[in-house]
Image (tube, rainbow, N blue to C red):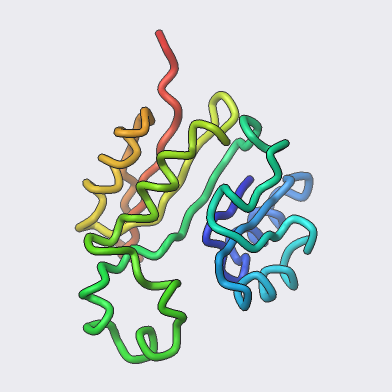
Length: 165
C-alpha cells in the first residue's frame, strides 16, 4: 500500500494495524509531516518528496492500493476556511490549485506506472470536485466510481486500471 500526501501517516498506520503483513509506504513533500509519519510507520518506508518521484523504482507496477489525501482546496477558497485550518495548517497541505484538483491530476497520471494489475487508487475529494477528480482519473485511463458517505460528509473516487477485454 502506498499513502501519498501522507501527513502524519495516519492512514498508513491504520492499514498497518489492520493488516499486519501489509507493506506500507508513505510519501509527503513536507519535512515536518514526514518526521511525524516516521513516528507512526517504519521510518525506512516513509520518504520525503514529490508524490511518486520519491519512491524506489522497485515498487513500480507492484502497489495494490494507493490512497491519497492530497490538498483539494481551491487556492482562492483557502481564505474562507476556518481559522484553525487556514492559520495553523501548512499552506502546502491545503492548496489544491485553481480548481482544487491539480494534485489529483498528477496522481492519476502516474497511477498506471505504480499500480499492480487489479490495483486500486483511492482519492479523497469533495462532493463539488468529484467530477473533476473522476475526469482526471478517466483521462489517465482508469475506470472510476464515486463513493460518498453523507454521515461524515466524505467523498472519494475509487479508480482502477482499465483492463482490455
